[in-house]
Amino acid sequence: MGKLENTKRYVYLPVYLPYLPNTKSTKRKREQSEIKKEPIEDKPKEQKETKQLKKEEKKEVKKDHRYQAPVAQKNAIEAKQIVLDNLKVYKPMEGQDMETITLEYPGRDCREEFLLAISNNPDEYAPITDIYNTVQLIASECLPKGTANNFGDSRIGIIRNIMKACHKQITADLKDGILAFNAVMLELKDSGVFDNCEIKGPPASFDLITHILEQSYARSIAPKSHLLNHYEGFSNNVYGEIKHSFVHELIREADIKSTDIFLDMGSGIGNVVLQIAAECLCESYGIEIMEIPSNFAKKQRNEFLSRMRYYSKPCGRIFLKQGDFLEDESISKVISKADVIFLCF
Image (cartoon, rainbow, N blue to C red):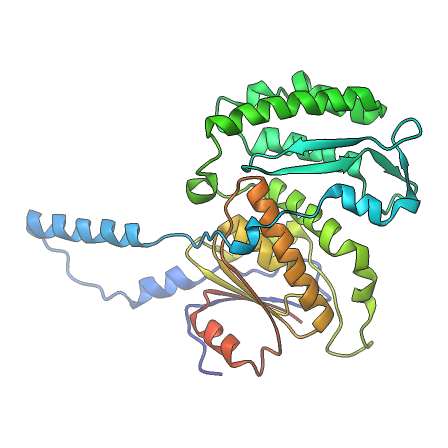
């Protein structure tokens, strides 16, 4: 691999440290130190205006790396399917039969079926909790200004009714609440308020991204997550994941911008790569040497991108690859252009 550039920001995470090292970028300081000091003199007004125009043109050229991936157009995995695939650990929320509800998302033609079921195992996927969290986050994080009042909140209105029905586990009330939620959502979708959100809208909030990551994991990885434990002890193939809150802090400390290129060397199931692409709208790369986590990462990426579309939120461009970053030539090229490089060792 070639010589690494001075302006890069490297984030190293020793596995035995539970905290984030000081990773603040020195990029600006270095750039400032390279600027030659010139004597202060009055410049003609025309020259100043020309310089200002050039600065504005440069600012306009810089754009974020949001990208509407073709794979995002696929339907997300239904919550209903998770329950059907593991039916023995679930029981109806109320009565003898499992009722089905359909929840409308902000994205055009985006909806999902949920079985109103409760798991006998607290570690299993919980569809009622998923509904409970999803409707609240849509109302608080996805709606344009002036439209949130149509749904109410945790104290009043449609959202309050759904939350109450979830707590009391009353099927009829929950179905009525979801029907009311869907009616308002369909009106907003038909009016076009979400149409340009993926193209021009702001990035999703940390809370919403965390929820989408959890939804994606539950549907694409959790059913076979036991396979992640199959590695050789005390080898280079030890597997582990990083908390979403840590990544959120990493973004702040490393000062990751929407115009940056991020690289995770040892990306596991892709959580860090996905979160940074969504939260920063930057170009995000990941390479993982182990086959099983790498395959899971690609499945989770597809589900995550579909769900970002469901919530009508933008996401940066994502690249995931299996391989050894010490030997892979394509990753050497990424290293040469990356602004932030993350390595957990």
